[in-house]
Image (cartoon, rainbow, N blue to C red; front, side, top):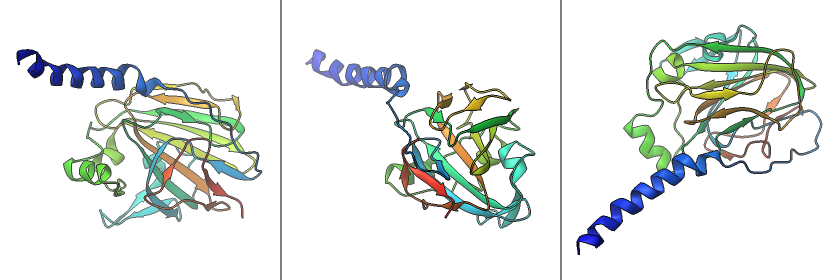
Length: 226
């Protein structure tokens, strides 16, 4: 009887160890589609929001306010007109971040946190577990947490990817530096704890995904020049 009582915590501990030490480091083979003029998803996860950028700002429904895209991205190179998408990378998703298009890395910028706030509150976490998308755009974590951005100038235009910490610390490893020539689908970073991946696109591109859709890094065409 005593042994049976021990089996559950042992199994739970083993599962947690496996998730933390093995599963999140998995590195699946990803081959990008050979289609011209597209932008690929930089990460695995769920689309949290898709917003139009106008005059360097986007509208947050939750805050009932216009937000500066440059502040969200942590980069002054943000498009003045275009699109901003958010991809939530959860604990069970692949934690690698990929290059969404081929081109030159023109900027890699780190921004320290103003506060360390969990991206998901209890309500948002339950919604995600239930398969319901959560708009993270107006949360304090999205606005104030540590972030790392890299800007690529490629055939489809200038695209910015920003990694936002899920809470206390980004814990990201970047494989890029300014001046690199990067290929579409190559690894750009590793997000040890997951988080929010922001993708800023020029106005010439059209989003090919919608809120709540699950995307796969490198495999999903997230925007195209149509």
